[in-house]
Length: 432
Ligand SMILES: Cc1cc2nc3c(=O)[nH]c(=O)nc-3n(C[C@H](O)[C@H](O)[C@H](O)COP(=O)(O)OP(=O)(O)OC[C@H]3O[C@@H](n4cnc5c(N)ncnc54)[C@H](O)[C@@H]3O)c2cc1C
Image (tube, rainbow, N blue to C red; front, side, top):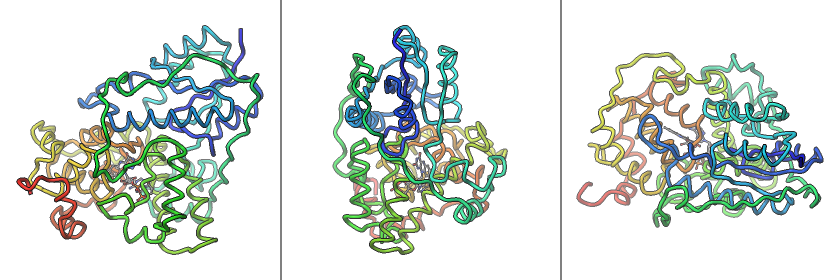
């Protein structure tokens, strides 16, 4: 039987700075790249929302098309079956003798269960897993996982002092044609995943496509071509347009872009053009991203529990009427409504918007924060399990915020949407 190695892509949809791919290329065996479009990605979750709604589904398909193009240049074929993990690995096992599987290491519940299913089917295969989603590699941070501090500032300062960011790996060289595994495969269309085709909303703040090439274009534009990065600290709380913040998150979330590559670009920019508070602040935010990953590593499944990582009990409600009013943008707060309509229409919401609507959901309406988090999971273009559940816990008083604040929505609206331009964009005049 044909002996092959598999690079199993999940949230690392890139060829640059991808250790799993680089190691597989070095090994010398035949290589097949795999992305499994398991129907579970689109099933209804226990809170009644799809795991992945149309915005991220479309972005994912764009990312896969781009990944296929990039892998083609390396003579590696991407196989994208719309099958459950079990069915996918069972059919591969019937056709090939699978020697090694290379992949990014994931630790959250659903990702672990998928891997267990695959391992049961392939008991004799060697598994090689790499932490490729971090800025600071887990082997380099000055903490054991169980000692990760509860306060972000402590974590950040220690990492900045004692750890360094590894150099990104280059795109590996192309393999010889005789190492290619030819297999009939095509990336499905959006309709085949159960969604209607749709056009991007003309007012979206994220008018970009998925994939490594687009991610790099955006990074070049934001850092080098427009120099927007020099003003990031002043603009990052904005609400309107594509440039108030970097907009890297959807590519970071599915791994089309590596945090280490962004870091390296910023460092180069600081050397060659200018270093200021803003250039540092983008790195500061990337450390927040890392922090939530470390929190999830430390606390495991507690990040999905109502009592969160603090094990704190509140009297949460699940009033369907209130939940639906929040989703539809029909609450008493126009600023919350405008943000929720933006999310529903585009799959995007600014960080300022997210903080406000989440605070309103859990602190004012006293609704179970996990319902809000599950809705975000469905809708967000940039859904990332660690950042989403970490931030929701933080805002809802069961996570890492030592202050446990409640946002004053009207004050926030008057500060960040002074002339109501944002609210006017998303609310019809009768609602505002
Ligand atoms: C309730 C809530 C839910 C959230 N859910 C997600 C999510 O599912 N996925 C996600 O990527 N971010 C999430 N965030 C964090 C943040 O809102 C987004 O990362 C940010 O708005 C993305 O826009 P940007 O790329 O332009 O960010 P920028 O301001 O340009 O920041 C650059 C990068 O830093 C990281 N970053 C910035 N702020 C945060 C933060 N608070 N937490 C973690 N990383 C951060 C992101 O990777 C971001 O791309 C959530 C925040 C809240 C309050």
